[in-house]
Length: 190
Image: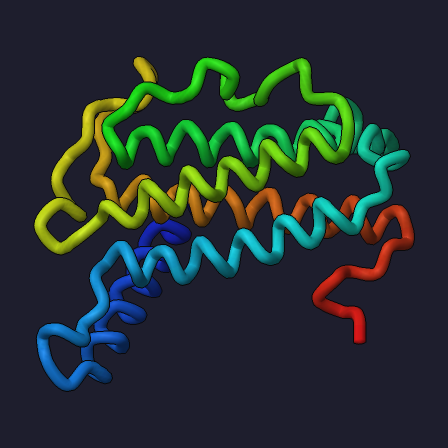
């Protein structure tokens, strides 16, 4: 299943890049791979930040508990995990060490308030934009060093795709948490 998701995401990115190239009149107007990926990062950023903002601060500790939900992350933990992973994967794209506070993809324990968590989330997208801006046709498919001892090397474009897949996976979970609390999604409001 993961392999199909990867293939679909890569095919989507390639089609998007090809579409952008087909519309260009000359070489100077073509969009780099990084710019195409950055468009999708911006779309993900808008949706995730809107959902994180829509959840009331008093509900950031919410986690479903009945049935198979037992032991899942709270809303706050979901957002921090998403942001920490953005930082880790963006660092991999840049060839940098991940920020120490990203930890084991859980984010800083010190972040407790909605405002602090949203700032951390926004910062992760700033860093991710910086990372994908460095992707170009010369380096997109060059292998990067492993970002953890458990992972093999990946390409810069592969890490960007992984970030987007991960972001939208958690976006879907955050959406469900809003729905469980009777909150209308920002994308559904008139």
